[in-house]
Image 1: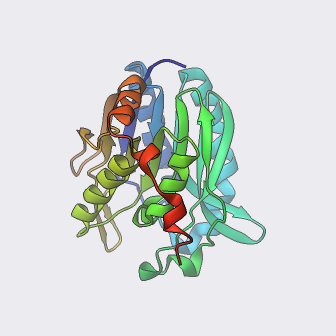
Image 2: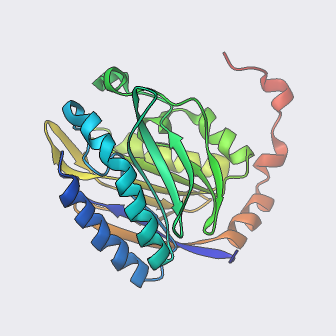
Length: 263
């Protein structure tokens, strides 16, 4: 694997319930970033149709064909793509992030934490496993939106060797500063890169502010989106991350024998 990787966050206004229109947006965006030598692209949460709760089963039925299309496209464009879609399995619907690497589905992660404040737990089921997966772009740890508020998940992925956290999201106003602060904290405390892709625009009663972020292992902002469709691009330098981890030795200075089991 190269010592650096070129990454992108594909931020866009998800058209609620309209798979065809959203697929068209993603198709064009992936071609644009591939032309700029991007190797890893991260899409928003539930990007095919948004949180169209009334038709989740219908949209989930389309997900296998969407994955197949993405496999074809990533093979043609030499990309790793991460994004979450509705998944139907065992009589349940999950919010599942898929990791597709140059034409192959190499991992999937079902969102662990349901955002009960907005009733997500009434329509979707939580997963029960974390995911860190090796790809041609590096070792990726996957989380989705509300997962960001649970630091234990990110520390676990860091200890399992994650180099880049990929976080698709639909994070609405007015919690912009929570989004930015928590993302930078996750990067800083675990000394790893973060690609966090939020959607933008209005969906029903919700206003999504965008503000997708590409963060260094120091928590520095390498690129940040505004409130409209955009494709952020940055280069993550693995040698720089390794050097920083030697300078401030958080991983070595931990005291897990003191922390015990967190209740």
